[in-house]
Image (cartoon, one colour):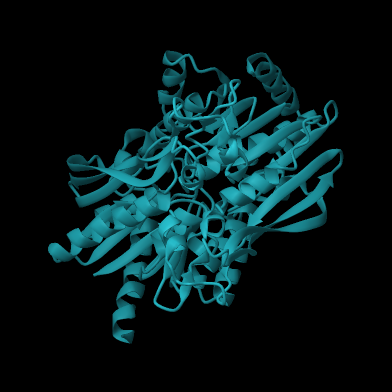
Length: 280
Length: 296
């Protein structure tokens, strides 16, 4: 089973929920944890994996073989991302715009374009007790995270219970992370911000045909907007965690909830049972 | 005219609350919400929309099943795994995975794949009681958020220049990727909002490195600083070593959540230590921004 944890709004507690689920389930399941928030991966602070190996991730970008190039301009014409410009006697490549689609090298009539790897980030592999851990780290200054997320997800071991920690938002990095999930947990907070972004995430998941449920974090102050929305739209509200300064302080130090309040383990197990009933 | 962007690396550290407070403290400015994925600033500024524009960047491949001969040529060439084989051997293209490169359309021997413009969002020019506001909404599951950010910034800058306004204040997105780079390129200052947590520090360091990579000046605000004084000291130490001025240390207070629930900016909500510190922070930040002038 592939279970992803996402949220439109950042900082609602995706990593907290994903990590505590993994830690609650590791005794009964073979868990594989993928941190797909490759722009800002944080799960390792809580799972403290021993990172044993790593692998550099590159995307193919064009390299012009000047001897063969006739400056016909075909490559610039086919590039949908304006990553190539052909001048009178030179070809300029803008790697930061390239999506690595391979169109230019495929369609060059002179076969004058090769592909070379452009590093975008790194994957690190390790384990934390029985949890298999993998995360991606986008290099500083790189714009495109989806190819790195795709690489991280190629490591999915479907024999295991796969928990994916997704990035915030609703655009391509999130889509790439939750694609193929059997269920997605949407973590939100009970404020108009949380509600606004929950609605966007819910629409995205509906479009992708992925079943989902909601976890409300930091309940207490705030309003009932999220609850009302879930009720009205028949979205299952699966868990509510209170605003708790002790939990917030523990979080700041990289401690999980069940580490400081072990009674929560039961609640995460219940949450997982509900998910199993609701998944695809 | 200057541009200030508020970013954080980690989400949920308080970018929008701080941006909205600045809206109440600065006179001649344009506000811009560049968190186009999950735009929230409008919930505090209560805009009246004056202009609405559709944003179209990029294309999506569409298959004409009547023409498709099930040759399968396109299947292996798509690098985004967007094309799959149907039971009858013809292909279908998943619009969400398609990145619009057009390779399939070019190589299709019977011209069965067309590239169609996709509408990937909307952007708005609005009026608020704090002045003009440019904001946007990216379509569901769309890409090109960086381009939409650029569009919003272009309009905000244009409004500022046309009306002789001094500042564009940009509420930025979380992360360090494409929309963040689009939000901070060419600004005069990036205010990094962080929090004293291991994640907050890690993410702050990464986003500051991105800002410095693009030669953007930075200042730092520590939100909820009293949640973990040891880590707050660590942030100050790191900032000091990296020549990043710490302009604000905002206490942890549930009054912030209350004000959001009411849809009121924290500076206009009841008196609190949070609003006081944000006002002080703005003073320090505006001094840094104007110090830039004397250097030039």
